Image (cartoon, rainbow, N blue to C red; front, side, top):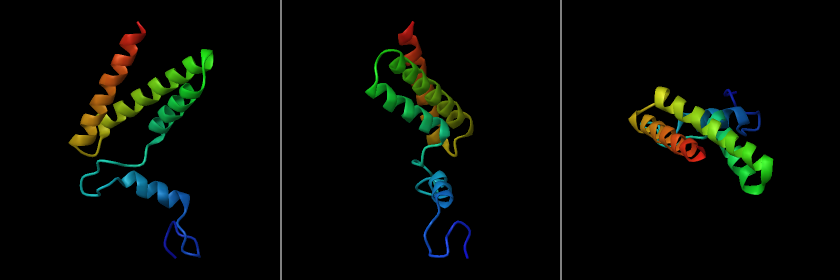
Amino acid sequence: MAAGASEHGAVTVTELWRRGQAGWPRRFPIAQFPNPPLLLAFAGWTLAAVSDGTAHDAARWVLTVGLGVWAGVETAFGVNWFRRLLGVGGIVWVALILAGEL
């Protein structure tokens, strides 16, 4: 039996995660399933959209930190020039967010 497949041929969550991290297209990945820092940023964005007050402020910080970590990882370790450039764009965006907070 292949690793990651159940005896009924269904694909496991682990196998889907692995496939999603490989990116698309395989030869020059432009899109891939979000990694944990980006998932954290999405969670912060979602919570900020549906909350107000202190919860909204905290969620915005979660968004900013998650996006910053993701951007740093992409800039340093992106699989190709496009992914690294995307990371640089994320760092610029986070810098603009933080500059707006001053």
